[in-house]
Amino acid sequence: MRQKVQLGLAVTLISAAMPAFAANPVNQGNDAWVEMQQRVEQAMPPEANPGAFTIDDGKALFFKKAGPNNKDLSTCDFGLGPGVVKDAYAQLPRYFPDTGRVETLEGRLLTCMEKIQGFTPEQVKEKFLMPMYKTSGEEDGTGSDLVRLTTYIAAQSNGEPFKIKLDNAEEKKSYHLGEYMFFHRWGEMDLNCATCHAYNERTVRGVPLPNLLDTHTAGKIAAAFPAYVIKDGTMRTQWWRNERCVMAMRLPWIETGSPLDAALTLFLRIQATKSDVKINIPGVKPRA
Amino acid sequence: MNKQITSIIGASIFLMAQGNVLAADSALPDAPSWAESQKHISYDEFMKAARQSFPYATPEQYKLRVENDFTLKTCNATLDQPNAEQSAAIVKFEKARLKMPADGKLLGDWKNGEVVARGTTGDRIGFADADNPNHPNGANCFACHVMIPGQPGGNMGPSLVGYGKRGQSPAILKYTYEHVYDAKMLVPCTIMPRYGGEGHLLTASQVADIVAFLTDPQSPVNQPEAAQKQ
Image (cartoon, rainbow over all chains, first blue to last red; front, side, top):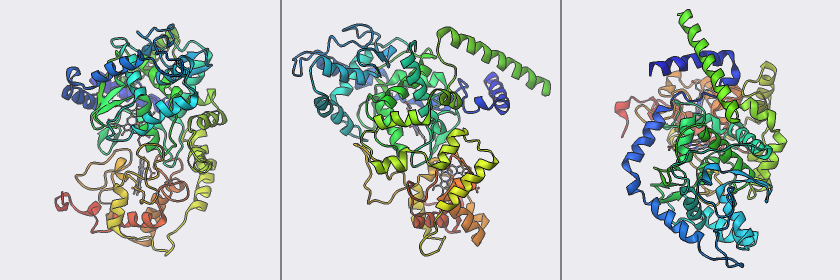
């Protein structure tokens, strides 16, 4: 503890001399948020987490034949080869040469619905995207097939830490796009993500804020999504979590799988990759 | 004292250097930085990605919410550290935006001011939890400020408890109105949102109500904790 305080002091002093570090405290102990999250996890231990059922629902959907081609999704390539789901989430988002895009897990599922099951982009939107969008409001426990599928695939990385390599130009570009979005001030409230998520001691209405640049905190958060949100009574993905804050900043609705969605997710998961926190789905969150 | 600090700084620089070596090994980027992000991505490139990522926004919403105006462009480009000349330019730009209430009264109704200050919604758009545009917007001042003794508030801004001790002279009312309508006119690049004017949350008369909420001796902002209802 004492050491932490001293280091904090030193970093503060260094910050004064080196402005580049001013907004970037890393790993100084985001204690109040970590403790709050621990209390939530104690109140709903894994065996009591209803999100476990969503994993089974997602599995059933994954192996169900559908679409014009009457095929299931079991040959979808999540980056490790067709049909390999084990460990895939721990390495997403990643660049896919077949689409020329950096894709999140949700984005990749949508791609496979088109490429394998033969749905048109319009059908994918109507059958999968819109239902997820329309059920993402507070206290709407309906859930959606895209979230169920995402939860099933993500859970196949349980026990593994995030290990994104960022070893090609497209992913590096996307990472920096996410970094840019994290710091860029915009929207009706002149805010950036950093205002609320780049410091250890900040609170909103007395509630401690997670410092997403603290790699342990970033790891805890990335490893928990898709998470069961108690207030909503349903599972929510990382896209949803980011969308809630984008909406609070009064920015427009962010498209799942879009360049900024993928970039932001990649940016946050690189911070998680720097931690040793292991994926543990379904996580649990009290509310948005 | 100085010696101790020097050695802590030395140790920290050593630790940071080590961190960089580790980062280089795993080929992961260094700690995120606002300055670094701008070396890789330009504003125009970012806006191009934004247009692909916000497909449901109207041209009006792009103009007012997605694009940076002069002030935010300057704040982003200078990482919130505008120099004297840039600050003066922001102040000039914001002064031109400032509008007074139609009836000229800076002091509104403190009870409505409390409702507006507490409100957390307004102007949210999209598929879920979008706000009714006919419903008055809230400002969520409590997110960043402690406003009422004993009630939860945020710590990103200074506590405003007892603000009314400054009185209700014309100068105080003007300062308070300007700070809520357009904080960046007084503190260029402050994290406090600009609340007044096109593309922001509040009307001039709502701002005047908040001025009353802050300065009226009867307002809970200026009452001791024991006098609060709950």
